[in-house]
Length: 464
Length: 63
Image 1: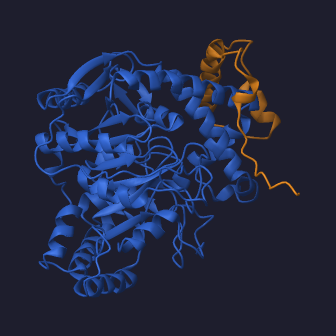
Image 2 (image 1 turned 90 degrees about the vertical axis):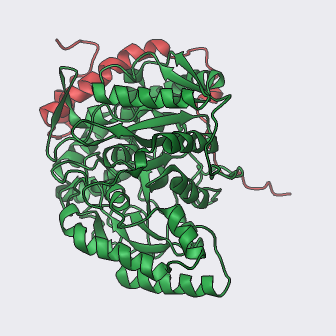
């Protein structure tokens, strides 16, 4: 059941929060041993919260659409009294004394916490092959990666182990798993959702955000997560407009959608290309105007983003890397070591160029309302697959998976990732809609229109 | 071939007693090569005060 359907059924008294929660816990018990989506399952707490939600609703107290809805948090969000590992050995026994802002907000909205999801160690990677808690597996094909770093959250949502989940995106960590697991995720504008209580990776690149099965579900979750938080200095104090797209067929008349003629459609799998173009034509059919645009060089943008992340992550982890070096997995340790070598001048020049390229994108986004792009150039690779072949070229899997995504973390623009179709092998294909700063409502509206017309989020994975 | 304009990443790593896999060294090489080209895009006429904004707390002045 989807979040919006569950919320409506709860209010019609057709189902209770306890029943929804028991269903999620049963799915976790059945599938988690194989898919490894959760590090910690909070069954007792979940049932206690669900009973409270039912009692409140029965007594006429309605906290809104998330009231009584089972959700999961990526194990990077601090949860008071519940261990928060960050997918690492270093924080294996860390039990925070406070809740992250996102956790706090969803709790106040009445959500029920079913558990903490598995992730790439320290959220620094896109495979979710965690050396300490095991590899997360893709529910469409358990031999394949679900993507990462928010891999457990994506799997939990795709299989109904939770109706929604939190994720974080520093270089594609919401959008890669959303794309490979056939769900929807939003990387909000930088500063829109508080980072307070999220274990950091890249100070200026981390974006907490929602993950759910459909665009409208994501909209509900985003509405609850977003808002100013003085505890996060990068949190921006501006009102959050109503984000839930209207019901019924949405017209896209008057909406201009840009399709880049360079970089984003070069060197991508043919099936990915066809699926994203199909969505573009669907948008046109709904009244949108498609426009070809020239965007700044993506490789250059990726270089700036990668240098920035290498340096920032090395700064975050410096004390742990010195004292507990051996507790890191090989891939994460190598990235942190690389970061120690990045020259300060390169980091600073990257920040100057970041502003320049953002200016170019903001100009493009004056001519179009959103950009439609593929999310990843290929579908989910096999677990352990180090290289992929795309258009006859062999690439490092990690670099290939993030090369269409990473730049938007540097620019801080909002990006909605949603299903675009399926490959001939039956694996999900994802796309992304990039918008102007703070314009999440328009992205969600376009996304909902495409989802309604194309019906791509209605197909269940093998484990559902 | 390695350019003399680029750092010798293997030597830099060795100097800091860091052992990096070959793939990581190649990635650093590739990043620094792109970064070298990107320097041409820097705006040297940029107002220095606008390059970085450091938001320090501003206590109320004592009267």
